[in-house]
Every structure is written in structure tokens, then in C-alpha cells.
Amino acid sequence: LVQKAEDGESISLSDIFNAPEVAYDIDFSLKVLKNQIKFGIKQVGQSFNTLGNPYLQKDMREKYFSNRMRLLENRMFLTFKFSQITNGISDDETPDISNKYDCNISYYPGINLPSFNLSFANYSRKSGSEELYDVDINQDDVIDDNDILDTRLNTQTNNFNISVSQSFESKYKQHFTFTYFSSSKEDLLLNDHNDDDSYVSPRSRNNNFGVNLKTTFNTQWESNFNYSNNYFDYSRVSSDYYEKQRINTLNMSFNYKLNEKIEKIGAGIEYINGNGSMKYDQYSIRLHADFFLLNNLDLNILYNYRIKNIVSSPDYNNSLFKINISYKF
Image (cartoon, rainbow, N blue to C red; front, side):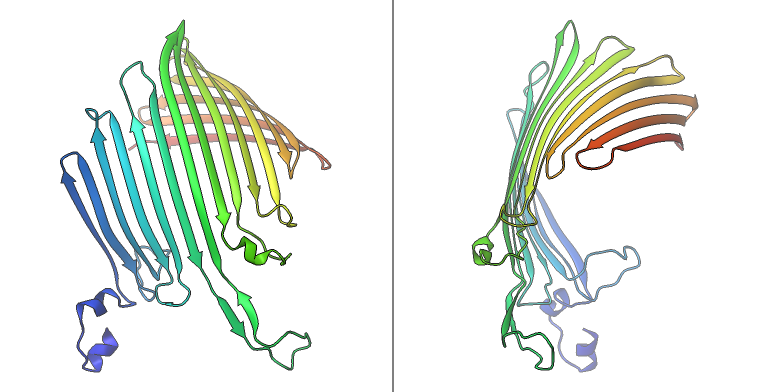
């Protein structure tokens, strides 16, 4: 913009919005019946500088749209979001473009009835290119002229998540939560690298299942039980970079409230079993206490002891003792 002004050239509105020194965020919000609609665009030029946030990501543009709808007397919420993020807007040939679609359904039927949350997501990312380069004839290694340098990335990720929570009474007050998450990232360029043993595929799969039960016995005693199973694998099976891991976690703990000064004390035990690329068993004991010392002055004490037995490796023992004092102004 400065150079154009010095040269006496006319400056259009498009020049201002696409100038490398300019950053802007334009957002529109509409409330129509039971819909809350938002859409807009934000951009940060590659030459933009600010003292307010020196870590601000530059040379990027994001376009977005979302709609949140209320149904069934505000007991159900439907949400849809779309965004397109372009990193490297100054490079017309190899920008990094991500398209994100998110859908969410939340249902809260009322007291003593289970609440549901269901979400789907689709993310795609594409960047890089296949470029030809010439070889320096003076270098020792012999490489064919006009070799191809492949910097492409083309992936598609699908996510699914469901959670159910329910409060009920069965002798004592209970709160139950169930969660399941699944994520699968596909490498759309994998077939192009079948004969390349050095290629590291970004494909991955992740599944997580968990249950939690919190029991309140009275105003002083409560307990918590948690179990989770997590599976993860990365890259292609035939690759040396392939990794696979399954982790089972079992955790039990309790809290006890003494008086107004001692908010609560508690203890817990945890067992973790890992199978796959790394096989291990881990045991841990946790003790904690929270105190109200004075008005707005809190004291928290935590002790954690952990033993980790790793197959074909030395055992790992670790302990942590932590004291935290905080004051609320």
C-alpha cells in the first residue's frame, strides 16, 4: 500500500483487504426465530506485525459459517459449523487448505432423565506439490536429472463422539457418564507411495471408550469410579514407523469433607495396562487435601507415588509432592 501510494497508483478496496501488512476480522451475527447464525472472514497478512500478540499466526485466511438451532422448548440444540482455513495465502501454488465440517446434537430432556450429546466432524487438509529440480553435476551422489520432490499432503479425517449422562438414586445419589470417541484419518496419497519404503504416512486411528460413576453417600463422603479403554495406531502396517498402542485405565478414589476449614481430604488408586508398541503395567497412589486457611486464602496439598513396569526395560518409580497456596482478590 505504501509503495503504491508513493508511485501515485490508485488504491482499491481489494488492495486494502489483500495487503500483506493488513489484518482484519469481520463477523456477522444474526438471530432469526430460534436460529443463531454467524459468518465472517478473518485474515492476517504475511507482513503484519503487532506488539499485542507476537505469536499471532500470519499469512492466513479463515472463512466460517455456523448456525445454532433451539428445539423442543430449548431442550434440544442442533449446531452446524463450517470453516475453510488457508495458510500461505501469499503462495498461490502450494497453500495449505483445510476444510472443517462439524455437526452436533445435544438433548437435555429434564430432571431424572438421561442427557445425550452426539457429534460428527469431517476435516480435510491439502497442501504441497510435486516439484522438479535440477541436479548439481559437481555433487558426489548420482541423482537423475529433474528428480521429483514430493511435498504433498492430502488427508481426510472423520470424527464421531457420543456421551450420555444420567443422575439417579439407588440407595445413594449416583451420577453416571458414558463416552465414546472414534477418529479415523485417511491418507489419500498412500497408493502413490506403495513402493516408497521411506514414506511416512500420516494415517491414524483412535478409539476411546470410558465410563464414570460418582456416588454421594452423604454430605461428607463421596466416591468416584472410572474405567477407560483407548486404542491408537499410526502410519501404515508395512512401514518401520508403524505404531500401535492399547491402554486400559482403572481408577478409584474417595473424598471426605471434615469441616469448614478442611474442605476435603481424599485418596485414590490407579492401574494402567499398556499393550502394543510398548508393554507396561503402571500402579499409582494419590493423596490430597484442600484447606481454607483464611478468607480467600486456600491451601492444596498433593502426593502421588507411581510404579511403572516396562517389558524389556528397567522399572520406573516416581513420586511427586506438591503444595499450592492461592489467594483470590
